[in-house]
Length: 313
Length: 313
Image (tube, each protein chain N blue to C red):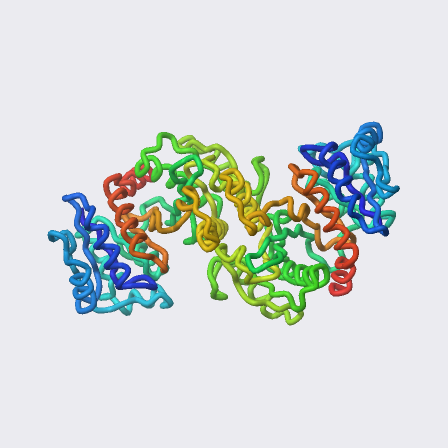
């Protein structure tokens, strides 16, 4: 298994990325290797400084260009085919690697996935899934957390199904509980879109829909899959993450709050595309990068995107 | 000044309400009295048990009916004119009281306000404002937190202006900083509605619009007024409140987290109507009711709704 990592993406790239990859490599199963993509002249010395390539488990692939955080995704991808993101998707499309991870330009990662490995047939719109730690243990998968600010009811309903399949195969949860983020528990509550999505989710007998949930139940262990439009989902996810930031600034230490630290999972998969694509926070630390690699391995083993494609066909 | 309180509304009514009102009465300025509305046969003994009417500062008004939490707002209001909510709005409309507060049926409070004192002329849709404690001190006013699940850009833009006037007059903030809740800092980010609202807010020179804010900045002290549609606002507000609930369950004690306790403010005003109407959590404790009375006094003194009406005309 080969996990490709963009060495050049993220606010602290390439240093933090290389350090995280080296951390990950020290614990890699023997059948896994990491393909680090970036400017060889920059990345190679960093890798040597960090202790080298760990029994050949880190492979370097040169990419002469870099897509910056602020660049326009589509324009940047077409103008910089040799960027680390461009090369990563080329390798993923050719199946030379099994997953591609980056803490770089999120838009470019999303567009790159759509242009290279493409949406799964039948998927209306790919989305980004976030992991929300639950007070009862484990994580809920929330989708969408930002790819689609405007959602139709049919998209929300499909997020429920995609999330359910992802939770089932990646987390091994039997009949995942799917809930719709809303502003009341009754089915007639909420925006017109949420009301319509509720009915579609309720009518879908391929999922275990448990009804609406509310903002105060975000961490409560009520659901395994949280369905939200990308606007609400993004705002909630970021507020949820800020809990850890705030607590740590105030010297509050707590086992559960530590799990709300973005570093503990390290990445968010793009779901609904024909491959494993994981994006990470721009601010990603080495620990976050290490954990993102761990998530990528889990996804490759679970083969969730193939299961999603089979279910959608 | 007379503050009317619905004795029958809330999960722990009438006990918790009467207890809260008695707590408030012990600290009331001499020019303020509380008008407690409810079934006299039930409320009077409770009031006596709690220590009586505090030098005549608590006045009892009989209301023979009660609107339950689950009742349909419009139907309940028309069928139960002698309910505590019905009587409260009658007194408010006649200006026999200066404010009306209830922890009862939120929908009935909203509809009651629209039918009795009515929307301010020029206001597209009244909304509910929530107070979000800020790490830098004080509170931001977030609106809407749930009255309007579906919002047009023009409504969001007006929430910005209403919130700005409220913060200015009630909190004494000069040129309140108004921010739009969104999923990115750039003005072209977000849903189509958020993008359009951004432009309207930017073009309004009566407010100090500082641009977009994101979920992780909810408590950060970035803005005095947070503009959101009632769907996003409700979900965020409830998630924000859950921080305190979760922290207290985990025995985490922290000065700032304590401020995220809903009890510390106790109520949310309905803004954009011709009077002071405050609604509270169904679970309101005596302390929450006491603080809601405090908020009502502050609003009456500030006369914010009149200032809003003047600005809108």
